[in-house]
Length: 245
Image 1 (cartoon, one colour):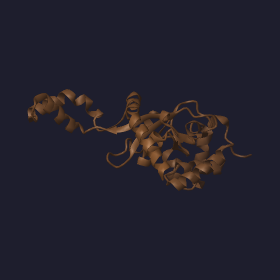
Image 2 (spheres, helix red, strand yellow; image 1 turned 90 degrees about the vertical axis):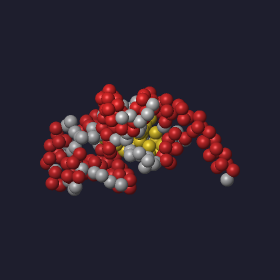
Image 3 (spheres, one colour; image 1 turned 30 degrees about the vertical axis):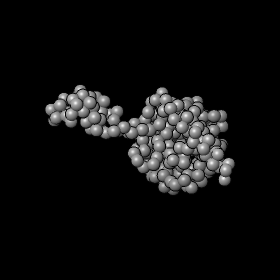
Image 4 (cartoon, helix red, strand yellow; image 1 turned 30 degrees about the horizontal axis):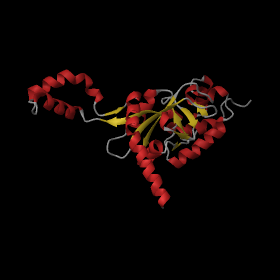
């Protein structure tokens, strides 16, 4: 009797969960799509909103904000916002040319390649992985390493728009720099050691708010609204420049 979860399916899932470059991930995504099409529908649907974190270079930021269309592909999403926020270290490092963005959407009909969150809840799937462990190439770098840690849903989305943005990643000054700035405003001079210690004692509870952080959705929307006139002006300039060439 044919097994419920075939070795090619298990291998494709494990390969998808391995680290890889863009070319490898594109190939693995297509294979995953092909082998998952025969899975029961409950493993190819998701009724929850899903999140995806991306570190966008300048060109990607313009595609998203300026042209309102960021091309997408078969990619990993998660219904767990916490997973999306901490993925690959969270907010991209400051001054390296990347803008962190978290997207949110309800998967459109037919967009779910495989709901790995749901699949990992199936005892038969777990048993199949265990049984075929020795036959799955690079098992320990794929399913053996990640399992259901990322609560993953694999979606095929053509593109994303500005309305899909849930949060932008931002950086404030370090906590110590903020303390020095506030101290100078309060005391009118660089704080003494005693003054600084007293001030730090009062604001220690907000230390975690300094440095890299994901903006709340309402703050993100205010930021996008604020820069909209500038973006529209740049888009007009770009259009006129292209028309003149």
